[in-house]
Image 1 (cartoon, helix red, strand yellow):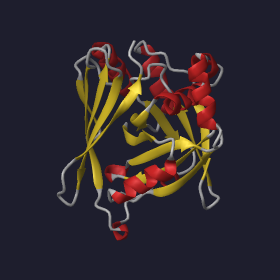
Image 2: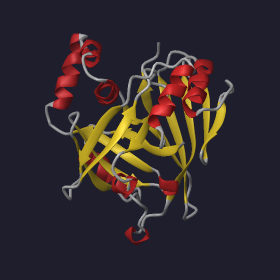
Image 3: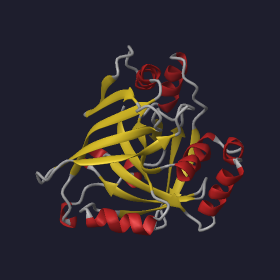
Length: 251
């Protein structure tokens, strides 16, 4: 299992794209998702990973989510959706910045079975697809744990190379590689156990490796929301890039 991608929530994708390009990231159009009203732009990272900037695909999406928040009906609205829209529309409604992360596996059904054996609640995998700007439809399957502090899992149906952008040296942007992911939550021991069950590593210590990425689980600050923090190294020797954001509401 390896780090597949990071999710950065950006209700204004045009503005986010300009900001990331100004920071010397090779940001490219991704496409529209067929199963939910979202679209993305992508920036390749090192070690076969990428950064996904996720935003609404239609102008009425954010006002609709905001209305549910004001009326206190967001959770009811999201529960009526499948596990995938529930996760990602929830992120659009409540999160900004570094909001989620995804691990890739070539045996999604086996990973889900293992996670369930470890006590996790993981709905059955669901199909997803996206239409790229060139008209190519790509498809994959996702498994999304009920616990928002845990990453979701992906298995490609079409070739992975169609979905995952590669670093292009001619774009003039230094290659950027994820070094570390830190999860700050209300119950770090529970989260660490869940993460280890998800990736198939026994124990409950709050530190492990997923591929080349060091992952730590720590308690969130008192009175604050849980969050995800990522540190990335740049091949040109410039300072590390730290990504931060609020990812879920405190209990």
